[in-house]
Picture: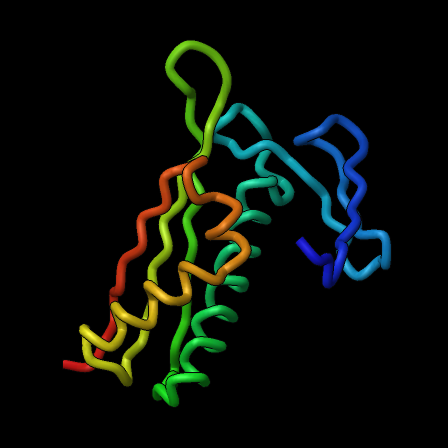
Length: 142
């Protein structure tokens, strides 16, 4: 892989209950375990950060493919859900869901665009074969 960009971040404190910041200072967040995991919920958590990153990255890939195909991407959006769960045996795992809105496209065109975006998105490539990723097109032109 030819590196085009490198992001750097430091997490400190108590892991899920600490802080994280990027090396350039543009991101600085307080971390807190979610209430569902026994935490206070008074901060963000790694799953929320992953969901935001995946949604933004996939939407960017979708827009890149869409521009190449001259598709109408008016009001397009991507929402991501990242699930944290207990693995059989030991350890924890993740699963993801992407919900895509392409209201200016018909279902067939939307499905083709989403499939192409899933092939080039760095997050999709990183997760492929590692975690379950379910992609749903929730909004499309009738």
